[in-house]
Image 1 (cartoon, helix red, strand yellow):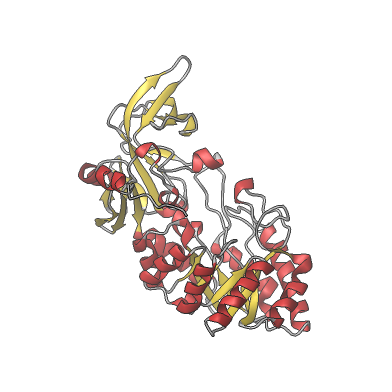
Image 2: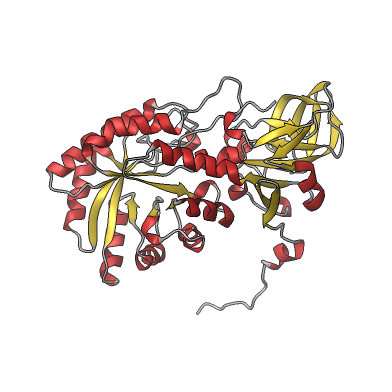
Length: 428
């Protein structure tokens, strides 16, 4: 039985795994495994929860494209009214192509290049979240050159431990992100002196996969104090960008993430007296529980003291378990077998790290059986690679009783054809 309430669109019907009203085995028969599969209803429900939580308040929801940048996913959220949080020109182009207006695009990222800054200025995006004074100078020069003005908010590093994995913690002083909160007033004073710069607010983002609101509470209080100080210094602080990072339950027993309602109540309680428009940047909490990775068993290999369930998906398709030691619930497509066995679930890539789970109890499985890796909608396909010259896997979107492929599996000739043997360029 599926335990995560956010995965209501993923369920068993007469012993078979369904996404909305479509059986996974039917998709697998048509396009072969492995593939990603998303529920449009799950994405829309997650967005509606955020919108409802902030109803009656001035808030712009900017979807964090880094979680999943498939055009169909972005377009689905754009149609709901979402803006975009982007960290590269490529993501900006994806957002614009999917129908998100530039006026709803916020540009973050720790190292924006001059061409990227110029593209954003020419597109007339909503704001830059500035990570350093060096970057601020670069934006100023570009804005003057293009005879325009950039709206900016400094990303503040509040030196707060988000209590998450060290590789996705971004709000401590040891992290590369943002400017130290203690020197923020000096940075804003410098911004006020520069041509082509219009200060509009404050930005924070303290990490990803937060399962407690306490770090947010500390960060929001620090932002509130800073906003008061900056206004006293004469700066226009009209926008507070609170970042994203709210976690999801990856189906661990007893694990429960804060809800959008709980997050909103905290933000409003701590910050509403400032009368600022809020920007929030959910990513994982919109799409994480809305996607699965479907794979097939290649064969079961019996080791000296364990059973290896070798599947056709690999670490290049879903790197989170290898990179972050991340947990994903693994389900069998068919529940007909009640007998269980303990498996190490691994892929075929030539790395010991190509492991999805160790000592996981699953129904007895055999070659050709289908397995489902749950909560793979965020940081799954978007982080995939072609390591070992493995093909990127297709992506599928389900809508009620229909499905469509939203990214095809590339052919080997297409992959190899990306490598070119052009003429040599001589250097004088």
